[in-house]
Length: 481
Image (cartoon, rainbow, N blue to C red; front, top):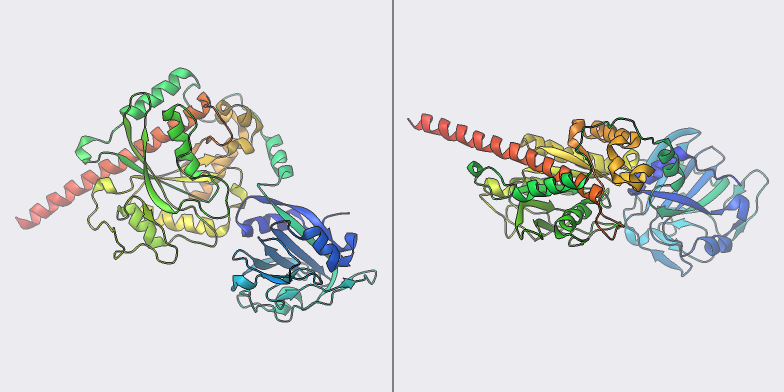
């Protein structure tokens, strides 16, 4: 039987959920019968779910829980829950209504169908409901919608038509990672170009060794007084921010390592601001590049804008423990009051999942734009590390050396350059070490080249700051004379 939730609305739900995912139909009342018992048999303990109702006004609405449905007569605590409207009276009009009291996000009761809020916001039905032939007259309630969810000026009528006569109700399981059907389709569209779309060094041992030597020998100009370039890594959770540091560290250690916590989790694994050093195992030298790791971007947990400013300006010390309820301020213990040029951030690398560019949540994009504004005010250069491109191009999955011959990778680079307002040459496609157990020369070359280019941009910033300080000092002397 046909699934009613179309691709446009699936993409909208993915954006609201805030991470790559796809949907698998668990329960459908026109197929399985409208029974609370059947609902719980099919949907309990299945993890995150989306419940979608289609009423006779041609309105589509429902709710999302990131926690499992249960039959234990208890409330379901879920800070990520939300209600939604996708369509109203036949017209596409998506709206999201976030949870305001997470303790009462859902209600798991054996005799009830999907129930949101403390049994008041949206009760779909109880017991068993028979079809009239054209629709099901559900015996639940939406009259008190808004008790535990924020409606932002909407009400039961404008969300649901106050109508529980539905042609169908579907419950979908939410599965992590993008829809494999969509991914395969995108991958099928990818092709290898005869000529590379960007000039790049040859993928061979000579290039790999040369890039490693250049990075080991790298150091900021002595006139800057800076001992190491500080590169700040920023990205949405799961994009590969901490994995990038681990990949760099692995290359210079000569084996796969995992010093920074990484992986695909619901919330950021990075809770401490770190300035990571990288040591070359062969020479014993520590690179004069520090990779600075901060919290991952989350849709519902925006990083404090002033906190970002303090990071850029060098006010926050290494190993500072982030506290979402108390952002870093000038009064926080450890605040560096008079940072030197060497304390500041010299270049920012946004780490972006190349396989999910089309579904980056709007709230994440707004956070990134706000950060870019603060960086631009300080003339701090920015690049984008585009990761997970093996998921959009099978040839890159097979061999990372195909990166600059892939039409799909070129398209991804163009898209993120437009979204972020960066020159295309500042978008650097890479592949982190994730599932690999041994090093790969072509993966190394992509990462090393991206890091070298970022260090070059950091040099440009430091030189500009030295010139600026020299000009200001000269002006100060003139005024004294």
